[in-house]
Length: 223
Image (cartoon, rainbow, N blue to C red):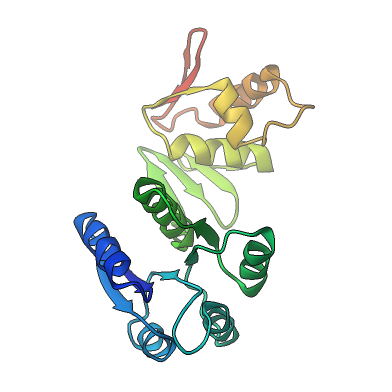
């Protein structure tokens, strides 16, 4: 883990406690106790996430957050404040915070929120142009399946279904999961639809060395 978290908090005891907990979790930690120090730190440190108190010496955390977002900083920001009124929270979100935690707080909950925000802030990797298994190749840009050198054009859902199988080789996948992940659980889609698409893909996978196995009363497994 190499994420750096910037704590902007004027209470030295709280700042020290947060640092200890975050470093124990494996994060690198920088801190600041006033507006001027904080403004310099977030520009030079380039943190992965900022924990921001609102009551800072000099100027408020709201003003600092406004400057951060105006500069183009997209780093996740968690406001950590004793000000728990609805308007305080609304103002924080309007200025661009990603989460708002009211003091006193649970450190376990705060750590969970930090992990969730960091996970969502990681940009998705660009998909590989070609995915290969045995004699199967999935041409992603052109939405084509090449099985044993035979080219098959894939309908959108065929492509999405096969792509999902390729991302989960050997794992038993239920029909319900496929409906959720591939069809977004549309109320118009029934379990039988999955079976039909799997049947179509099986024909196109012929000779590829890969297969979609039926797991009785559960779903499917791609091998």
